[in-house]
Image 1 (cartoon, protein in one colour):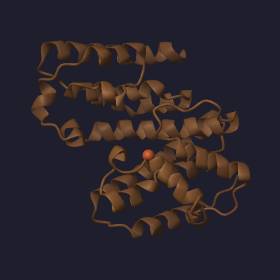
Image 2 (spheres, helix red, strand yellow):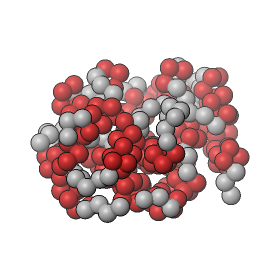
Image 3 (tube, rainbow, N blue to C red):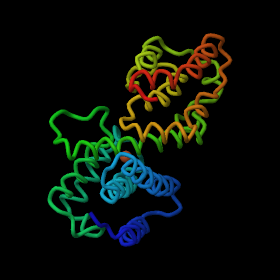
Length: 258
Ligand SMILES: [Fe+2]
């Protein structure tokens, strides 16, 4: 398909300009959007998918974030709205998509809507038609790759609002270790200790679906940055050493990557 990227970028900048430019949350999501769109393009290219449709999914995936933060002052979905569903509704039920692209086919509209609506789910539901499912996975991969980047840049004490010392002296719970060993993502509800959150950050990469996405995640080096955390607790320090040594082996054996 053909997308007028400049039109999308201009419309996006115009849309965002209606929100408080001094609010750091707005800037964070704007920057995240452009990076995710670029990752979507790269993954699509590597996997032989439609780069334009993928890029558009990336550009619009977090559109609900701006209205979420204006209305509720938070990015916490549990305390406000599911930003993915909210964004998909704004675009496809309230017609916001018309500002960005007017010439999508019905199937393209459905693909973009489904990918956006489901991008923040813990797991994708069954029954999504294969043609759309690929774009759902691609968008989630691109989002995860950028979340790894953000988590590598921002100290965990700032992300989770927990004093730094509590991370340094933290234990890692058995259930969370098990997720790592099984190559699974960590549900928020099983995280007990501060260091569990750091383990949870890297476990996100275990469910990156496309080989090209995993190649990009590896190239970025953000897993290593997150795992460079140096705990004071001897057990936790040993566990972090184990994770550093085994992270990519677990990915490789899970997906048979070369
Ligand atoms: Fe999102």
